[in-house]
Picture 1 (cartoon, rainbow, N blue to C red):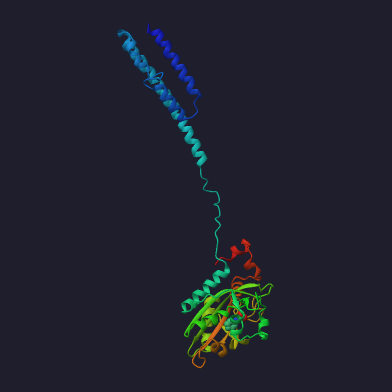
Picture 2 (picture 1 turned 90 degrees about the vertical axis):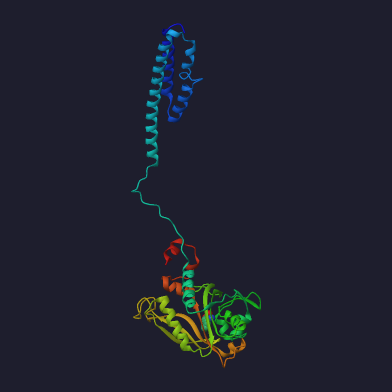
Amino acid sequence: MADFGELGEKLAGIRNEIAEELIKIKDSKSVYEYRKSVMDGKTGKVGSLMREMGKIPAEMKAEYGKRVNEMKNWVQERFEEIDARLKAEEMRRRYESEKIDVTMPSKKREHGNLHPNTLVRNQIVDIFGSMGFDIYEGTEIETDYYNFTALNTPQDHPARDMQDTFYLSPEFLLRTQTSAGQIHVMEAKQPPIKIISPGKVFRSDDDATHSPMFTQMEGLVVDKGITLCDLKGMLDVFVQKIFGENTKTRLRPSYFPFTEPSVEVDVSCFQCGGCGCRLCKGTGWIEVLGAGVVNKKVLEGCGIDSDVYSGFAFGIGIERIAMLKYGINNIKLLFGSDLRVLSQLDD
Ligand code: PHE
């Protein structure tokens, strides 16, 4: 190094180069990397200047050191300045992109709900469960014997016409009523018997209030001294829990081959309280289920002594209860998948 003029030029050259390079840099990460390469003690343009001290004549060393230090300070300041500016800019952009508008309306979360049939079935199961009933689940395919004959409805009995049947073969059919389960239970067990039996049943029937497939809940109680009064008392509790505390029941004579006497059970209209409205067709009463005292012939056929034991049975249509409770006028709406309908039926 001949004199300071030459050193001055060299340092000025480095300064210009760095200044030009810094103009091109657009982000703080590049500033960091460029700074590392410039300041590197071995290879960096600025970092390596001190290593050249050895080549500097002794009398010039002090001045050389001073100038190199000034240079270093200048470079550090530039880097810090530009680093601070870019970081501030980056932070501002980040805040901008992550900003949350708390005044925006929130997204509505869709959630599923239980089907009205399931809600009603669960509620009925809970009510009878709390009265000590067990659950018996039968099969959807039955024999003609269990679905009809054992229920005192032999071949060619006119009552078979009430339930238009899907036969799979002369022997097998899709059960038309959960009453078929009564026979299985009574064959398998001596009284006391106290069961409910929910399940799908099938009839060739199709209009606004009938569907070829629907759901029933059978009830059966057999024990010593069971009478129609027990049925009425139990049904009173049941309908009050389902339709409200002020609901009353009314029994009308009816006919089922497997019960004697047989009744149709009405409840006082829970919408108008009995004065008459569209729901009860002006009568103040709504029919909800069929029931009766178990026919002695049925008990005997299952090997139960009808002089010792007696019982009552009832059959509830789940869809009918769901339609009444939720104000649905077409049974098809319960079996469709229209979410506009189903989402309104949340309890
Ligand atoms: N099984 C009858 C029906 O489907 C209802 C019923 C059940 C009637 C039990 C009396 C006793 O219509």
